[in-house]
Image (cartoon, rainbow, N blue to C red; front, top):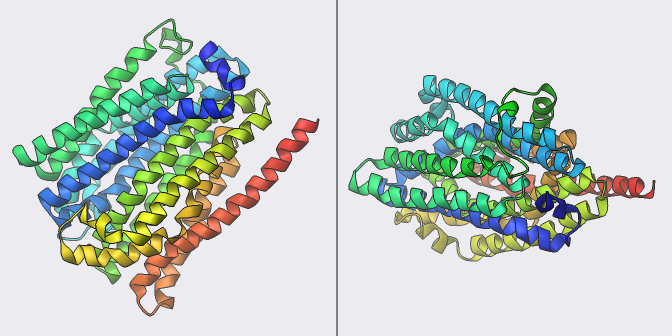
Length: 450
């Protein structure tokens, strides 16, 4: 109980680093795994396999989106209940997370396996990349239940006051994955199938590690026999809060599908591979911001439940500053060292030369991305599902998709139109977030006065 009560009493900047730093380490380790995985596949299986991984990624993200629907929503709800000192419902949230994840992941796995090739083709796979993408995603789908439980329990651990345990679970998964990758890909000659198998095995080990903490009956939030029946109120509220990151991830997948198909139409498989390289760069640093957001989430949620709005905003301001500093690094790397960044992933000179210009275009607005991500997370953390959903959809659906469809027809080089649509939509979305945040700050001020 003392562990969670500190959310409302300890200095916010110390709390943020206490909870964000383990999350950052975990998310950075996870992103580094994705980098290493891509390097192994790019150098061990070739540029087409790297392009296949880019095609498969939105499908993986859709699977993960269902996990975030449950995990992020439930962890935010857990923090709010702890702030309200409703410990019975807090424990019910834990059981509901497991049950919902098992149900949703089983449905996603079944649907994915039945229609795997048509889905991958719709996502941008060509005749040359489909076989690679199929082999990879088939294994990932078989392990989908483990993936959902892994991410869901990690979110719960942070909100229950165990950021370091959550971090350790991720590091365990990443370490095992990195060890198994070269064994399966090179020594056992399993190719992309081996990379996927390494991912599933590593997550299985991490799940075993996670559940040991929740079997401890001395913990405020733990497993017991009365928490496994779905509670209508908890389920509805958790899913409504989690709907924002869910829709964001789904929208992101739709966007990636459109981008992949536009790139395939105007630039071919190598343009898709270029986008994959750029995504890997931005992904590493976006994961750091996600770590910052995860550190902010229980602080903001608890203090919102406790009606300490000044502490809510303090956590937001500090997180925004740190996030902007992180994305400044991406801006520098993308604008001044695109050649060096691309060579990390491939030795193919055609791919390297074709990636430099789009990387500079996409990275041109990185300085505002951090603020945009943190603003959206604020509304999720305090349970404002409607506002969070709207912000999640503005960049992806309202702005980026129309621009992706229109911009190629407005440019001399249609391929440039695809690239430029991304930073333009980021700019408009950041302005939208700033306006909504201004109104929310005013609302907090009125509540404080009354």
